[in-house]
Image 1 (cartoon, chains in turn green, yellow):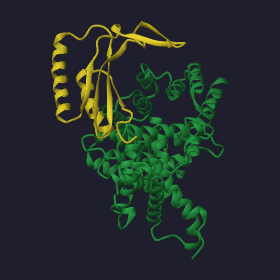
Image 2: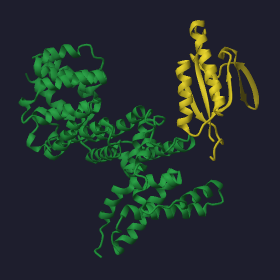
Image 3: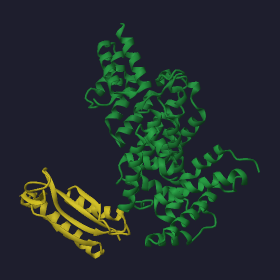
Image 4: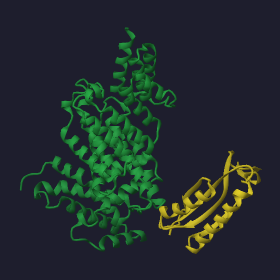
Length: 407
Length: 117
């Protein structure tokens, strides 16, 4: 048997951790015991697999081993009455093939992680920890939170799930719209934090984007009949297709119009556009699907000049109907500027109350610049600069300020 | 089965006019009877205004009595239900009805020791 590299086992860990934890949570009903058991099972894999080779079903091996580890632990602690009940549950109804008994284990767990009774910060951390298998240190690093703070956040969230009896259950059809929204919001937030890191030195944190897309694919596989789930996946794929072109070799932000479109990922575009077309046929538009369609329109254009801005203005109009927001008005104005000129766009955003949002000032600055109002543009760029925490975007804004100062 | 405290927070001042209050009270009575019929009712009470509250604090082992309420503010606990429910979602379903009927904020908290924990 060929020797297995630790990296390969690490790959299995990344791929199967969420499935294993979800399966264990179902049988043992306790997140901490489930996590400990799965981690012990992966530690055992590191001992056995390099000499024995990869088992036929790595996920099944991990889940069976974790189940045995959890049973051992519960037996050791069997003086506690609740532990006896848990140990009995673990041994009852042992399935033939562990890994495919209850396909929606992970779905249950993601609805628990994203329960509206938990804070958004806790939802994000739990989802990355339990379904993504990220370590507390990795999650802390991704969100620029010290590891002890992140550890405490996770401990508190898990304690609330246990003490308040937040159930492990896919919500009933009637509750689903309300309960699906935070799940999608968490996945999109993870993606956005990776795509346009709100602070820090690099523009993109690719691990978070990859993790969000992995979660998006999982949701799309588990909930094939929810058009907004598909819409979110398409939106992320289409945004991700431009990731390589969004930063220059020296780490600067490249605006959409100036991107080298040959560097866009054609495979991701094709996949995203196919999903958008399938969504259109279903005829149940929602905010994620419409934003995906806007991204698909950009992906269609061979050059920036070929962009179908009329269509994009119209799609933003639809977005404002289903999900009105000042940010959507701002984004629509950006498209309107391409059709009717920068003054028309400035008129649309004149009454927006987005003073604390740096992109509002950046958009306004760009429109003023294009109207030839250099002094006002420079001041708006400076306001945007003062509010922006991302180093690459700050560099871009600083460049714009400088270009307006010399004139 | 876990138990939950449902606290209803009320703005200080006069209650709503009768044309608002009466249908609200009728719906609350219906809610309470369904709670009992479902076997979920444990205890409930409505409270007199926070201006009637008295607060006790110990200082160096001596108990001092002062005019209340404990927390100054524009809203105070106006009443509460203790219910038993299978899990948080079941408790939240009852609490949602209460919020919708009263249009007031409701806080849901698990009761210690009511389940295995």
